[in-house]
Image 1 (cartoon, rainbow, N blue to C red):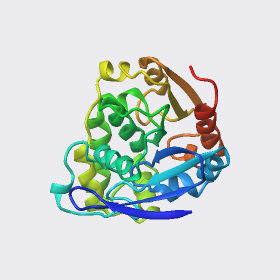
Image 2 (cartoon, rainbow, N blue to C red; image 1 turned 90 degrees about the horizontal axis):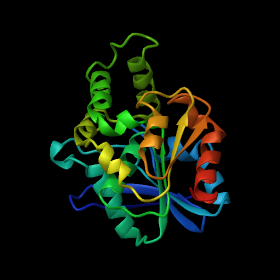
Image 3 (tube, rainbow, N blue to C red; image 1 turned 90 degrees about the vertical axis):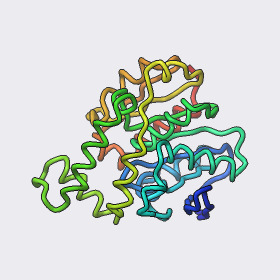
Image 4 (tube, rainbow, N blue to C red; image 1 turned 45 degrees about the vertical axis):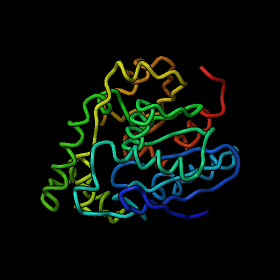
Length: 251
């Protein structure tokens, strides 16, 4: 496993890890998470490396090994997509695939809407509403972060806080991320020309309907895997579906 970092235009250090050799795949983790938890710990990165990919896994700003500035000036709209465009330039990637889970999937969507041209893309842990109405999800997480220690045991907010504790996230930096979200319209999604795999847990409705998202895309294909938004990440079927989406016949 290789670890490295670079500085963005606003001086924020972004870390990434990579494993494997072959076709480049930029793989972006979800909110409150980081590359290790999302992709490495449960074997997805190893599976993709074995399938012939150079798996490049950044930690988003405010997450993992990347810098976690508290100044809101470092969190303008669409900054997460900006960071990934900067990483692509830094690494000199020209022919690559692109994928993400949850917030990573939303970041992939923003990159595609803004002109990123991978060969294929994977948007996982995401539904149509999570891309077109981002305020609903950001409001949920603002409630989580603004009331830490006061959530009803077993509630979605309590579960989110429990996950935050396992990853050791910085609540101040993470809350700033929530103000960077940008909605993508259905017309913008429908304009994508490349094959996009929508991979989602069978019991995951946290970001709306994955089937509706796949149906809204010109070349969308739905891959269902076991689990809900949290549990799908720990199951091997997620990595297997990403491999299938990126190595199987086009659609």
